[in-house]
Image (tube, rainbow, N blue to C red; front, side):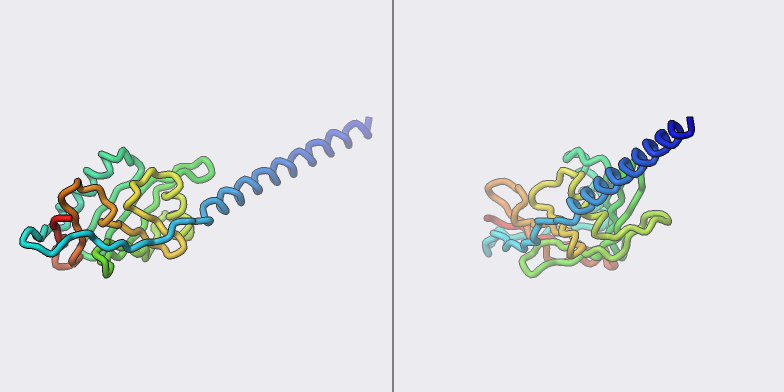
Length: 194
C-alpha cells in the first residue's frame, strides 16, 4: 500500500514540473518573438515638388487628437487611443498578459525628421504598479495591432515612425511635417503636388 502512494506522488510531482517547464518555454518563446523585431526605421523623402501649389496645413492639438481618433476608428484599431497635450503624446491601450487585461500607456516626445516625417520617441511607460520594459510593450503592440505600412514600430530604439511619404494621399498630393510645437499648440504640415 505504501508503494502505491509513493508512485502516485511521483506521477503528480513529474506532471507538475512538466507543466511548469512547458509554461516557461511558452513564455520565453513569446518574449523571444516579441523582441526579434525586424522593422528598420526608414525616413523616406517626401515627393513634394517645389511649385506655386505648395501649401501649409496648420493644426492644433485638439484637431490632431480628433484626426487620430478618426484614423483609429477607420482602421478598426479598438485597443489603442492616442492624444497629445501641451508637452507629449500619449498612447494608451489594453493588452492581454498571461490571461489578464492590463491597461498600459506610453508617453512619447514627438519630433520632425530631416525628411519631413514624424518620429515619436518613447520616454515613459505607465502600467499601474507592474514594471514592464517599454520595448516589450511596443513589441506587443506591434505584434497584436494591424497597423498601416506607413507606421513603423522599432522596439529596440523605442520609437514609432510615421512615414508621411508612404502614406496614401491619392495620385495628386503629398504631405510632409514641418513643425511640431505642442507647447505653442502649432503642428504644421506642408502639402503639395507629387
